[in-house]
Length: 208
Image (tube, rainbow, N blue to C red):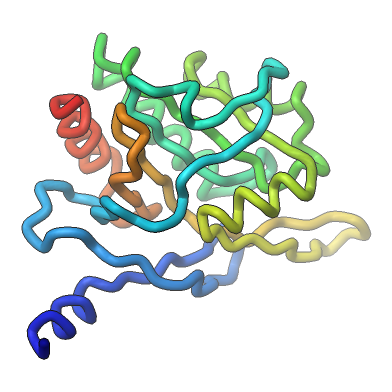
């Protein structure tokens, strides 16, 4: 009993929000096996982050089931994010390039947390600029709140210096699903890097 509790305590990790000057605590997540072959956080069997119902930047309704057969990487952000979002997207684009032909079995999804400014047209310009295979997803305020709650993603507007301007503090990391649509990994921004993401995605592809 004591050993199980100790293991559980050791393997709990926190999600941090950081797309501005602040950091926010967003609850806990439990690692699966301690001997995980992955470099990033193994969240196999996680009880949330199960699905979404949003519209892509081409105007097509999308759910996770649409991408069955592919490893899916889901990142939450917004197009006017000054640092974390473009850095993450650029890293994922680099991963796709290094995967070569295997990249066709990977789908990267960018879910906006700023539907007020991130229109379908803007997402259609921004997201494929990193890789033409990437898809931007959006919903109205209610749909955005719902998917953020399902994935336990923190986000909050931070007023800017000019009237009406703002940034958004948000959870900085990517969720990764295997080809069967099962949640497997959380890749925290700045924790392991592109090479680590490449390693883990290749493992998931090998097991698909």
